[in-house]
Length: 274
Ligand code: PGA
Image 1 (cartoon, rainbow, N blue to C red):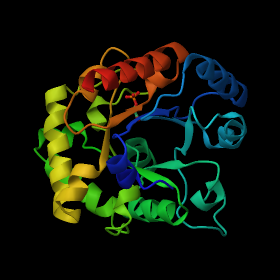
Image 2 (cartoon, rainbow, N blue to C red):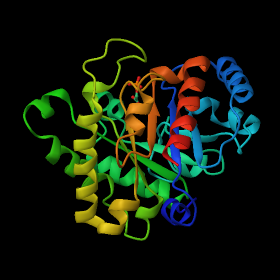
Image 3 (cartoon, rainbow, N blue to C red):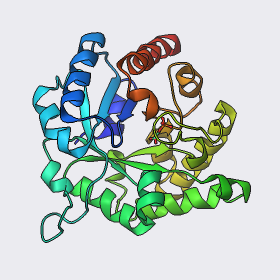
């Protein structure tokens, strides 16, 4: 598992683009997608492209993927290492296949009832298995309307990071995904758009909570991604926001053309920022 921060301080700061395919694609479609994407995307220094396919295709993709081009992530996993947990997959079983694991995606929290405590166990399990957790946090529309964003984010950070010591925090990525800005069903109706200004405000909140929990250096160094209807048209505006290190892409990652355009725009903005 990479020590993200040390690596970042020795080299230039990386940008992370994660494709969250959710419950889409058959095995054949996943293989074909990887094949087509691989032909379109040249590896770029400082850019980490992470594919999060359905769990059953992870192994097949892991045998085909060129790790100079792409990394793999689990969308979900259970936090016990092994045992009598019918139907579950342990992150320990995915070691060597997935380098990253999503934790606490809003669909897990809101559709499957994943609790803040569960996210804490999962983040700790990922670290134990040397898989980099990507802790997803974000408020609902109602919580935002009630002025609870700050508190919700704080609780999700405290709970999700409960088992993470100050030495292990270096291995964690945070993804801010306001639930109200996530497109439903991968390209369906979007509730609202998160503007770059909205994003900046919440990124500041996240980093200030991290400062409170782990200190000023960690708060500056920790990688924070944004997710919520990111596409090739808006990616640059989000990556320009101070303190944003990448994106978690759902709907727009399901099409080779649109996802490779996102990568192309990300490379451009990295060049522009130099
Ligand atoms: P979206 O999904 O890009 O379709 O909004 C993002 C996510 O849910 O991770």
